[in-house]
Length: 144
Image 1: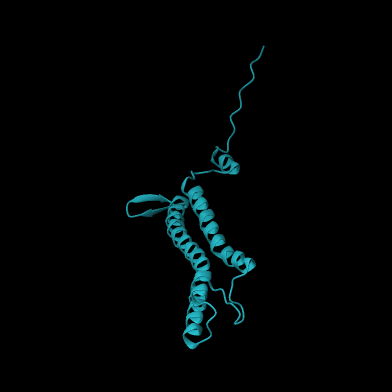
Image 2: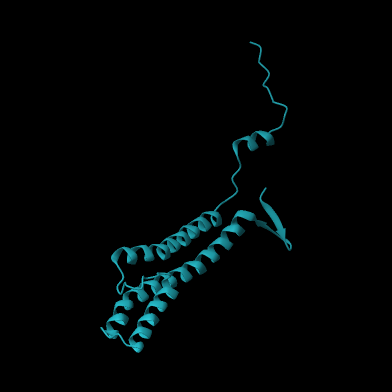
């Protein structure tokens, strides 16, 4: 079977594995949701950061623009071209797909862990035949 001994108690391996997957999935779900919200927040605040600079072309304005651009890259991984002051809608959607997909992956890992945790011992059909005694009992026919 799928049991092993941990100390003096017998542990069912799929249930133990399911518990570990559940704990891991919950932790990583929280981490990936934080990453998703950080990405969303950085991409929404980027236009405000750039609009504060205005149309100035001095050194301070260029440093502020590079700071806005670098913070967007560090949080989301989105690299803008030097001549591109705004985020396109395509870049916005594609950049958010990765954190959303990561969030959905950990949600599905949670469901898998829940399935494993809720499992019971399932014996295949051929195992029932193996447990039956080899000798078959026949009834004797009665004479009329």
